[in-house]
Image 1 (spheres, rainbow, N blue to C red):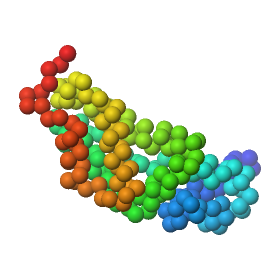
Image 2: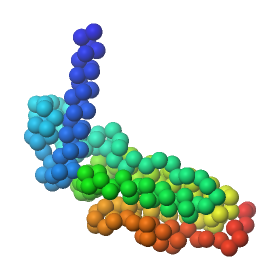
Image 3: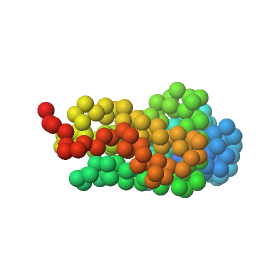
Length: 197
């Protein structure tokens, strides 16, 4: 029983530290993030953080792994792929209407520029997952003849995610007009559908 309680305490402590890290990133950013402040907010000793994570980049990397940084669901499937992609992009944008959520991702973007391991984890856990969801919807549209068979799906998905991140970095709102313009520019509208091969 004591062993189980110890594991529970460790998990509770870990979650408290990850929550504190997220809070500190939102309020202070990456440059001033420190183990001292995180430990104080989490209510743990600073030595606990150093024992579990050698650097603040390693700690932020685990926070990214824990999820919730870019919480996006699958793209809806209707008879209008342009409307589906537009709605999905706007749903992503609404997540970052919350200033704290936007600040956390802005801080992580600053962090990945300095740490290769964190950059790889960020790409796997955040951007790849979102690109995969979008790519699945675009492939269905290509198969249905709603988009051209030679559509460069990989490139299109990267453009969409780059726009989200650019808006976050520059603090420009990702509004309906911008999203609709992007969809229109990257996803051609066929007059009568594309011929299937």
